[in-house]
Image 1 (cartoon, helix red, strand yellow):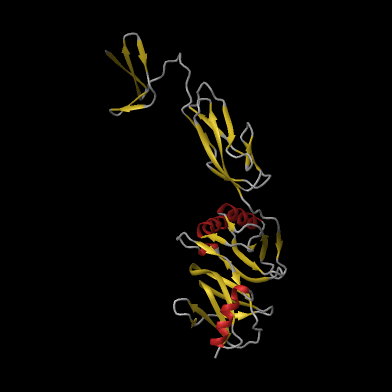
Image 2 (cartoon, rainbow, N blue to C red):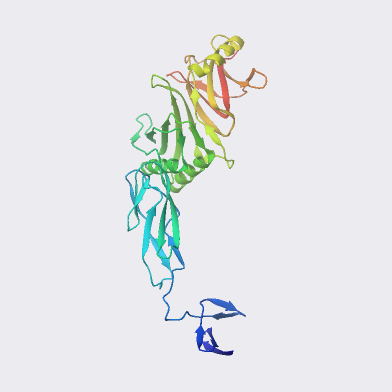
Length: 335
């Protein structure tokens, strides 16, 4: 076998000749030299890979977005690609990579080359879409948005809602996104919301309201997503007062703390991983008298005083306090 070494600029072309066959391969580096070897020019260049413009994306129902794909190498003989949706009932895709959200869910869009090389994008269609932004007439520094539907809030939905709310607030305003009758949010979703708010350079709070049978608000939990910790966990969002969920606890609290004691039940049990603000409708009227908060100790069955816990009852009869723990809280006049 004869080897001829030819210097071309800063690169070396190594031609290996065996009998009548000349073979080359691209981009081989050996002994500090870059060796460019080229395929037989008589053979068509095959597709080695396909790249897609996004690996993850979100579209709302009826929203349109375009995905793009590239075939490599650039001089591949067959540049034809095909698009496919794993579930057209969630997202459709046409021959140009245009996707359309059809119904809530998650599916994959795949682009194929003719030799079955492929790339995939995961598409989420959120179950809840921001439907309204309105200014709170009581606070001109706050923009509010009301959200309904669905028990669990996905990270994609939360991120989309926060992004939209932030875009509709002016500099110096704080956006408040309000959700009705939600059950669960994860700390991962909260961190995603915090990232969206930071990217939009806006302050955003998330308010989760629990309605009663008469469609009134019996309780709410307000979360600053920036406070979500690194620990992955689900936060139960229910806040109950004056309902069947609080009746037994209220009866016991009044036996121990007097007939004016009232109860707020946070559905979440144990540590919340952050401090949240709670408001709940109670029977105690705004009198200006000193109030005390107690927490039920489930292991002992007794109520423990929460020292130095600031709380107040507003003119509408809602008790306001902050907490980093779930469970049962009792409010009563200080002895």
